[in-house]
Length: 361
Image 1: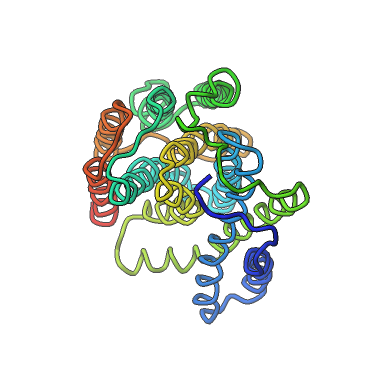
Image 2: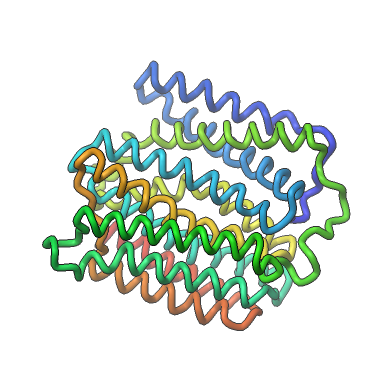
């Protein structure tokens, strides 16, 4: 875990904010006025902190690397639900939302979360070590998933433009599921030791939570994640209006959605790096990027085929260059098993370039 002491009694805010968030989501559905924007934003941020607490509690209970999978898969499933719901409701206007959200998630995870973890961990601990085998395996799968799903559509000839036809969508979705499934099997069963901290991720000084508290934490984690997405969706019209007001591209909406959904994972990963558990940070970060593609692409492909909705997957030339740079730097950074603040700074600069060029293309 991340060094946070798991108390025998759950703090009041850990259960209050998820429940209050559900109330705020219901209020946002019933009332669409601008007066709710600030309360919704405050509730969203507080609920994210609650989600991180519950995720850490569960992760400490079941051990690594299973614990990091809990938050990664749970958040990604909710992200998929959000993207699919917007796709069905938005029609042709939302054709590129899945691509923009997935690409933004990869960039935020690989450059933002990883970069911040390396920077924060490097400042506090000078140098940090991790398992090269696990990180390299994750990067290999990530490179294959992003290339097959986000770049190849630009070069197929069955349909013009950055699109897959129905059979290609089925193939891409199936391959995404296969790759992600094999990675999870390797991470949790066949080569589990490659994803554990060298000193042992289960060697915390404090005992894990009781079964009852862990079960309650799992329920509240799910409630918090659903509420986070509900709040994000309620705030989406205000985000879209702000994007239009500033004349920014529609792809910025995907960036905002990805950032909001990834907040719990990002906070948990940074706290792990602060506690000198960089392996846990990388498990969270890279695992969430893989889950984002491995689960989102099959889901949106099925929705596109089932509802006859257009689906734009191919990235533009600028985005392809940024993705290639991210993968190249990621392989170099994670190829030595040791990091400093320099690698963190490089990744954060790439993230800054991505965000700047997303707003001002």
